[in-house]
Length: 639
Image 1 (spheres, rainbow, N blue to C red):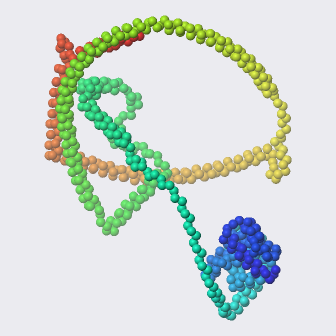
Image 2: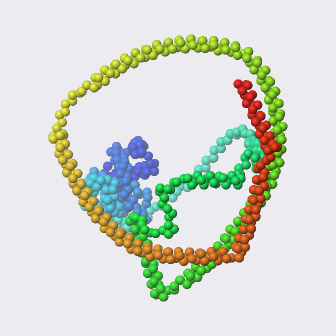
Image 3: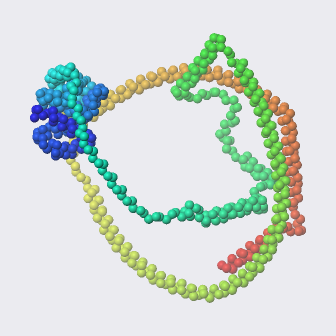
């Protein structure tokens, strides 16, 4: 078996390559490999060695990949990927099976796999064993486990491995000196090429029955929808026409506009009610002053104080930089800013003139619209008066016709009531018979209910007695012996075992110690707070001084701006076009007032009518009163 270790390792390499390509379960793969024809001809001990090596490589794949991946990454220029399984098995045998194999068998395996690449791998592996390889293994397994089982045995075999590496180095040098040996090149036999296999006949695709095409009505809207849409448009058009008619011809009872006299009376009533109210008589604070005085300052938090301090420092820094630039010979931008300010004031004055002109023009147009509206209302009032007279005549004719119909209906009702009086007696007899039957049935049902209630009452009394006895038994005192001593331990033989009294004393001492620490921390925090508060007060004083200076400058600028605005308003008021527009506006207002006075003078004499001749309104009220009386008499007769 010693001479065949090299061939066994090659068989294991083949099996390992198969497993990595299949990616199946390890146990299933080992069972299939043990029963395969390739391994049946091998001795059982050799077959066991191959299977153990393959299963071990798969089990410690993560551990072995740390070494193999780094080795391929360092020597990827001349290494072949097909030799990866050989390096994995070599690494596994060196770590786990070196004690079982011995140096002789291990050296024979190394020499059978190739001296050059195996020398390179063993040199790489044992030179980096105690450095980064051990660190990577410690990240996968526990450090103590790695040191005891893998690193220690490999270090014990290090002298023998060094001798083996020296032997491999000598054989490598001899191979390099010998040079390449010419080998025979095989040539292929001149055999006749087999004919290509004919392609199979394609399967016939079964033909399906031709389906009916989708009807055109699926993609077109039904005719009913078009008809409904047309009807909807017609109805909408009719509704719009009716709305226009309703807006043009208002009803007399639904006129929302109030007369001037009514508005004046309503305003007087509201003023009297408001004068009686005394909401602010006891808690009046008075009118607030137009100029606010900073008598009381707002309390600021630390963040606000820090922000103000940063703003103050930034403003001071900018001012110092500006002064330094001026000292160094920079140009002062004040003339340019003054010129820019003058241009802005000029633009503002022109803008004010245009806005005033537009405002006057809009007021003039509003007055013209009011005059046109009064003319339209006069014309509508005349048409409404004619319409009212026509409706009054029609209502009188309708009232006379309704009186005749009521008289005919009253005669008909009288005839029907005479026929109904004969059926009342028969209905009364049937009602009495039904009442008698109901009375007998109710008496029987009451008797049955009384018996059921008595039985249920007896059952409840029996249950109450049983419950009372149970409560009496439960209320008896139970004597429970109490043999607890808080000065004795539990007797569980633990290291930190103590009694309840000792536990309470220790907890009290611990609580006292925590309280003293808390007091010390609190005093330290209070001292730091006091220091911060003092710093904040100093910064607040500096900020307040700077703020007062800025407020004074802002007040001066505000006064200057106010004086300029007054001057601009005076210039706008003296413009000729604006004066002409104001004059035109006054003329329009006077024309509107004349029209309103004329309307009031027309409406006053119309309110009074002569007492001798009754008006259309009186006639209309009289006909409606007669109709209401006739309907009331009819209701009384039918009841």
